[in-house]
Image 1 (cartoon, rainbow, N blue to C red):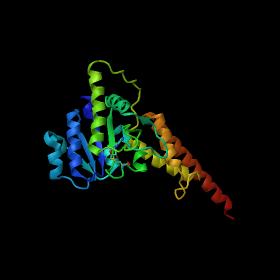
Image 2 (image 1 turned 135 degrees about the vertical axis):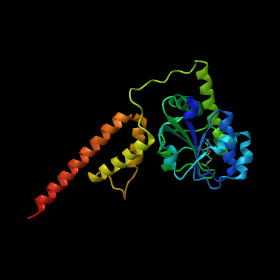
Image 3 (image 1 turned 45 degrees about the vertical axis):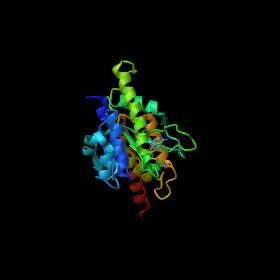
Image 4 (image 1 turned 60 degrees about the vertical axis):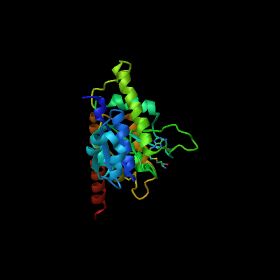
Length: 256
Ligand code: SAH
């Protein structure tokens, strides 16, 4: 199967159906087909159909889901788009690097390119679920592109990477012995990690500071594989069991 078929475009809470149609067209022009819509405000809609022109098949096959987690299920590489700098910097790609990297990753697993709301973009929480971010280096005085235009730029770079590959000019992707952990497994891991940190008294859910965000960024930089993740889950369980035994021991000691 072609790498392009493994790349999905995810639109979060899109307001204007015309933009959804415009995105479908931008995708098909560049050879991409898998469109995921997270809780769109108004879809299906005639305006989406008009703007999609001959990309109606992409629109018809769009997968509508309730949450971003559902849209990212099964993905081994997730890129979030951002029109501006964020407070906590994240591993950042430029559009060219994003095209090459997404195309290469798609040889092995599903890849998601995530785009935000027309008015507010993606929330920090959504961006922190992504392995990397990509920013289109537009005019700093007006850096926010129309949604469909932003999708067009990123999809164009993916297409350029696929053409380089056809010509045998794309450097080969370093094979790893174990597949990377998927988005779903990573989310379960972060839940487990947070609970373990609470259990040992390191982390307070009511006063979280940026602990989990920074840990997410750390693990994103490392890029855990499935085996490493399962070892880490085992370590967490061991730590939780030790904390539980200690707590029980202390309770028994306090009893008269
Ligand atoms: N006002 C919003 C911009 C939303 S534009 C904000 O400040 O975040 C809608 C979407 O288009 C963004 O969420 C992003 O997915 C994409 N987009 C627009 N301009 C972009 C840029 N310069 N780089 C990357 N993505 C961009």
